[in-house]
Length: 302
Image (tube, rainbow, N blue to C red):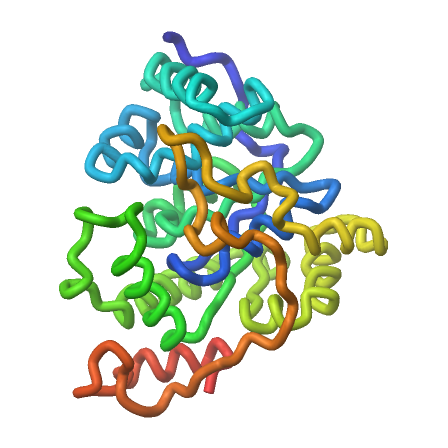
């Protein structure tokens, strides 16, 4: 099918949440997506390829990574997510395998206009080329660098691998180094955002945001040039109102973090921050490496 004549997203300004997996991104995207001027997507994982064909090939060994895009298309095309609408969404993707991923994002933006898209795909931060592709596709996008303490991130990553059927048979947890996942992602994000215009990026600790959403959500909305009235802020307190808050049909169950899918309601309260010092919970024989400690402290952790 011929690619449509669409302009790149030069006039659009989506919000991309940048973080590694298990960094509160599902609940944060769900919160922001309830703002009247935003639309929170599940993990669409578009920027890992130049075309839909490349995206499909990249997801061949991990088909659940396509669930978010299929759920988004089903919801936006037909207003519901069931096995039939998801099946038609998959057919839609396959028929348009030659489309650039930029045109797919433009299509999603058209469907949600005038609300701005919010995307939180953790795979975007796994390579610099993916981040650069996102910026090239949407040069006026805003980038929210969302952080979480490396210790709690590592514990959460291994917990996900151990108990979630989304990952069963895909990755052997014994060969996963959560410290390296955390460090590489945040080091890459810091380098990328450091090259942006100052107002184009913002950094927030996820622990602080979830502990005091009434304080931090207005700041994020103001940075984005959005409404900050009580009605808009209150709407963001209900991530469970997202159409992607909860498991999807059997042919696209995921698209967000399993913890969020199981319990999407916001539960404000202090999110504790562990210490950087001491043996690693997943490897008591050693502590965090010096570069990790240095980066974590630069991000505000102690």
